[in-house]
Each structure stands twice: as structure tokens, then as C-alpha cells.
Image (cartoon, rainbow, N blue to C red; front, side, top):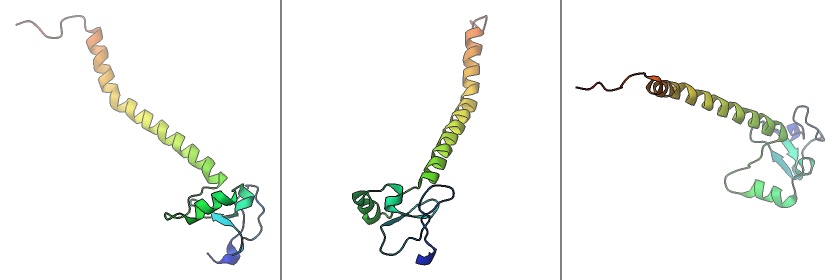
Length: 109
């Protein structure tokens, strides 16, 4: 992205919306790819250094993406719980059958 296209903004989230220049301490959201001034999103100097200098790349999610990510994780857990219930339902049904069976399960020989 051209430096002139970098603005401190992300949708309706309240940040300064001014340009992010080369000499500013900035950080890019890994999800939305929006740029922010570190001080606009309450990132301290020592945090900025850690986030921007480790060998794996920048690790930062803006508030907007963080909220959406939490919603997606909740949705994923709900889907997982439903899938487990569907997979285990036949097992639970067989337990009910065994418990409610009026006679012997194994006939005598």
C-alpha cells in the first residue's frame, strides 16, 4: 500500500482519521489491513516495539476485527456443540433404550 493511502481509520471506529506517515509509530491490523497510529489505539511504545519487531510479523487486531473475531469464535463453538450433540444422539438414544427395556437384553440359552 502506498504511504499516501495509509489513514488512521477503520469504519466507524473512533480514531483520528489523519494520514499515517513514514516517521509515525504505526501498526497494521492483520485482518482488516487498516493502519493506525499506535497512540490512537492506546499502544504504548514498548508494546509497539514488541508488536513490530519480532520475527513472525506484526500481530495486531483492531478493535473492530477483535469484536468480530469474538463473535466468530462463539459461533464456531456453538456449531461444534451442535455437531457433537448430533453425533452423540444415537448413543444417548441407545442408552435410553437399554435403561427403558422391560425385559432381559440377552436372552438365556
